[in-house]
Image: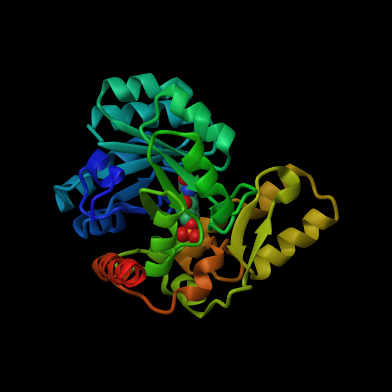
Length: 310
Ligand SMILES: Cc1cc2nc3c(=O)[nH]c(=O)nc-3n(C[C@H](O)[C@H](O)[C@H](O)COP(=O)(O)O)c2cc1C
């Protein structure tokens, strides 16, 4: 399947694995790239030298293009931005802020720059700043979210910019993929489905919570702090929401969640850890390899799209 995104990035299939803190390390990224999609290393708050090692490891496992997700609110972001250039990373996606000040440096180095946006205004601003594409991410997503749903956001962004749009949030199978194309997207980015991939290093307890999740099992913490995050409901989210309702300060809430995603990913602490996952968790029924996931979606979408145009 050829789209403006497969051409821009030099990949076979328009499926991108979201850059996820702790989850998206080099094994997962390499497996997605080897399956013909674009694997992404989530730099999150990792020190720049750890990100460099991750990049060097992914290069050992794949010859295909891959990316790095740079979280702009991380104080190390300028150093990570530099590592990306030094290591010749082909694609960067950015989260949590405006990457404007790094775009010129990245473009000069030939890095394709793809900011994650949650509104039309941000998408237009990123296009003006020189972005090659945008990820339009709806609030169905796992992790940090905006206000609009994918269904409403993607077509409005697609109408507002000329650069390609990648739809994210609530997509985990061929139907979601085909729908995203119909909304005007040139590719999809998936997070939750890839958390459960066989090659994902996420603890089995966390994967199991996603596989067993129902449609209504996610909730949003942190709305009062201006940093809403979608997670699966557990002891941690209940404690957080109770404190939030009681008017706890931003600092108190931050202290509660400190290291909580790491606890879930590495230790399998599904009570006190933060189980970031999207509304689509209810659709994810089993662990599959990245190749199985990509093939299932591409073959399924071909069939669906043909069926409708017969
Ligand atoms: C566990 C987890 C961690 C995430 N961490 C990040 C991150 O560090 N940076 C980022 O830009 N997006 C992050 N995201 C969002 C994903 O990259 C992706 O856009 C989102 O999961 C898509 O929605 P879906 O979960 O419905 O597939 C994260 C998502 C999850 C589930």
